[in-house]
Picture 1 (tube, rainbow, N blue to C red):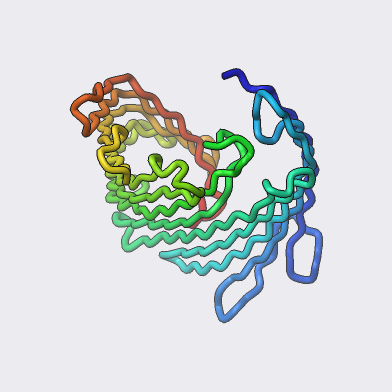
Picture 2 (cartoon, one colour):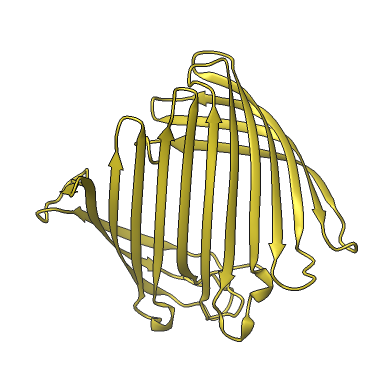
Length: 280
């Protein structure tokens, strides 16, 4: 179905504490040895088709109120951060679309020696979606959780380096009448990547990725596993920005015998910005 194009205008105002000062960089408050940083963002926007529908188009002003609270601690060999972001969306001409999103995230990096490093992360989100909904005019209510980690063996300047990663995620819907229950799933992933240094700022890589999709609905035709092998390169663009290009082949096998397995070329391009050692 062709969708009607949408247009929006946004005005953003941000401020940060303490002392109700306007500033470019948020200033942390020392709380028992931890850095506590509260921030607040306000945006006002106009959207002429906020549900992205073809018929019965609705337009509205949207106010976004986004406080955030960050608590972090770091020393020479480790860094940990916890951030909570409750965000309120107010749809002035459609009050039934107004909602509050919640996001809680924790990250930790530990460097045991110059050859052994571990990065851990966890995130929980609860939010509502106004576009591509199961029922026109009713927000999809979504909850998701994810935990993951990457162990790195090899010094940063070494000729070779290996990453071993694992993650687990859950996706749930909180819609009435069981709407979208067929999309609820658990996803587990294992990844291994070998890096070989080609120059001072460039490394070649070979990666294997295994992902398992377990849908909660009994005998779901979507339950499957995916295996991919990719090769490529990673390079440092600046001191804080890196790029990665991978191309390869992926095979997807479905649990149901009646579903056709898929085999396709695959490619991935990443751009990573790391403003701090604990944040990407």
